[in-house]
Length: 363
Image (cartoon, rainbow, N blue to C red; front, side):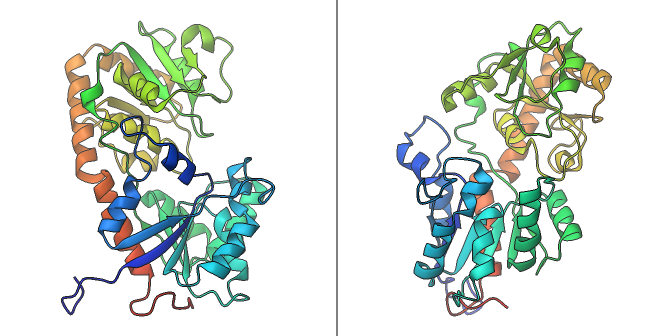
């Protein structure tokens, strides 16, 4: 309710993903994966109507099926927003490339809706991305980050118009659920972003009496004996097959190098949602979600011996695996559900949009 006792007015928000969202939503079959439309429904319940505009495909967008950064630039989509969505209350770009054309042309088109970013590649060293960041973060009206660490880095490195807002992250806790677990047959690690430290993982498990599975199509540099030490799964999987991989794991390892981006966050939350014991590298982002000894274990970055000891400790103590897994799920239920995320996101959106007339100009 507003100060006068009336419900807040409905808001219309345009979201610009850097990869196709709507295509996956149209193909979705209930129970076959995380519900791609669930967040939109939860935000609608909170008075916020989301319209997602996917990047266009070639020839309208030459990079439409390529690198997500270039796909997100999508000049024609930006022109459509500037000309046809002038009555929106807010435009949110997922990552920075989708906002680049908008913030550069907004004054030329007298575009009044505010523009925000949802997630930002603050740690990127790639020149095109850093150039976009230097432009977009100076001109965009608001940045929504996934973690407090990401917020601190963004505010330290770039002259933001206003403090970044931490809205966090969520996982579909109905799809990823301990009810689907069925054993503890192996140690699992999942993910393929640049911050993954699989060299340390391989070094840690060489002498352990356990099967170790690494699910990553692109796993970076691995020691020559990696294939003899761990089983590397590079094939594509359905969501159900992917969940089954978690379901039979005794624990999930999230080995990371220091990074300014929230690397590993998706696999961390999926493992927590499945009620699995997690061992993760000690980077600031991890400390926001894992309390050592309570809902997971944390080891020093790059320390193969410490990681080996932590894995061996849990392998010898199935009861401790289960306790940490239960506490991880309880933490997720308290803080990281889709509904909790929708509450934070809705509050962040309403804080950005001026009260009163829709689409008022940014400063």
